[in-house]
View 1: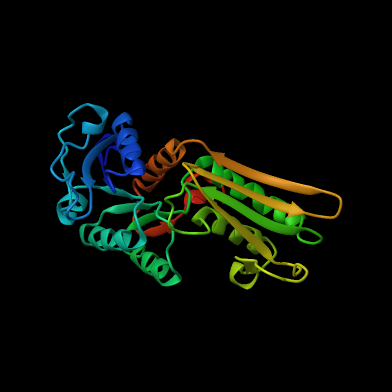
View 2 (view 1 turned 90 degrees about the vertical axis):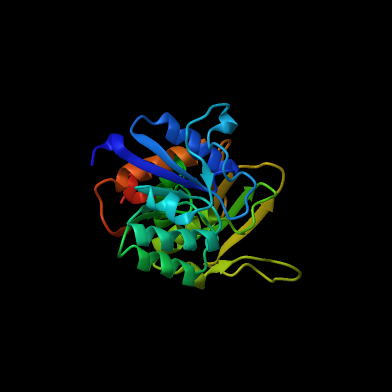
Length: 270
């Protein structure tokens, strides 16, 4: 298949991320926007997907799963876990590859994604930003060198409308730090502190969550030792980096069949 014929559909087409993805797809000469998916009953159904840009592109916003997903080679999905899994089921029926940027999945829901990857190609990552994924590589290096004598705290901040906490990116950062010392995050994470907590337990990874305003996404991992501390931070000022990373994921999937990948695979950081 020629790169110029890659047909991409966007789920959550009327949301902030969906609109940015549509704009990014339209700007990529190697891609064609083939569909714009919204939930049933969305007031925007039937409108031209490019109307928010002040132009007509000939693609109508639709809630018809099979028409939108069946007419695409790739689906980019930044919606909600329940919606993403419904879209994933349709993608398997039609052989459509999927890029998933949705966060907040349970372990059972992640298992559904893993099972689907035996039938179709999937890039699944809590954060599609190239910068964030380079930061994860830096965290792996830091955690291996600072495995003893340093307490780890992860602080994340997002806009007031984000529904899951901690963020998927913060959890991924915790997983990377834990894995660097041969542990599971489930065994060492502390998600809340209140009242008389006593001294900090050695080896734990603490999380702090901030929600407010229109913060796109800030993440800091603090390695606090005696007499020094190291902070590794990533701050997003725009969702553009997520859109650009998603398109890189689409190009990565071109020519690949079934399999589960993440942005470390896409960027060659393994």
